[in-house]
Length: 276
Image (cartoon, rainbow, N blue to C red):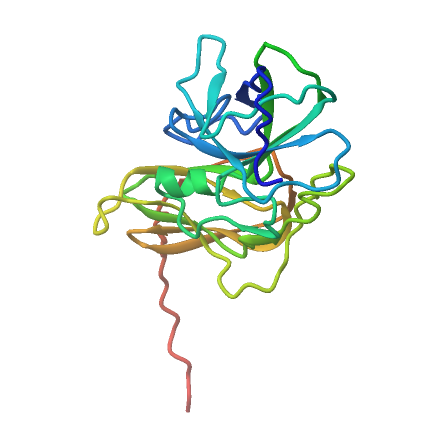
């Protein structure tokens, strides 16, 4: 069905939390850590348990400000109700660009703004066989992307102009997002993109840079064995390589201190070579 709304008197009311895992915070700001920001929207699909299909039209849920327990109340655009008999399966996806027919997901190439960062934070939650209840049902969302937080400090006159990730695949297929087995498929990386760069942070002072610059970005789980972090300073660009498997739902923290080493010289003069 395109609508889950049997109007039998008991509404399906849901709350949400983001899983309290180690994708803790975005550097410099708390961005949808243990709960959604007020006004965030997500897609929800409801189905009688055991059904084989899902509606093409989601119910759009809007998050209220989190309560004292850290939960958001989710307000639907169309109120769903429990059926008179049977139980309900609930599936929810964030951001709203992701639907039941989504087959791939891309993170933003520039995540230095909060809006682009949020749009890259793929999360989902599900409940199977929920019995009719007058109480709120909580959906616990899990982050599917990997996260890296990078903090770069300059010393000895070095200032930081920008931080980027290199050789990082931004688009991945999503398989089995909806199956009769109710399995949401694993995210896996593809490696055929022409642009594999993600902007982490850019100094507001493009000419002089900052003594310290930091940021966080999200990217699909993948193994990277190449140059990975690029830092542009007032003296030029330097790159840092890695050989690591990055997992979804995990935050990686990197701190870099970049200095300018003076090149010292000593000198000697050798004797003239005698030549008759």
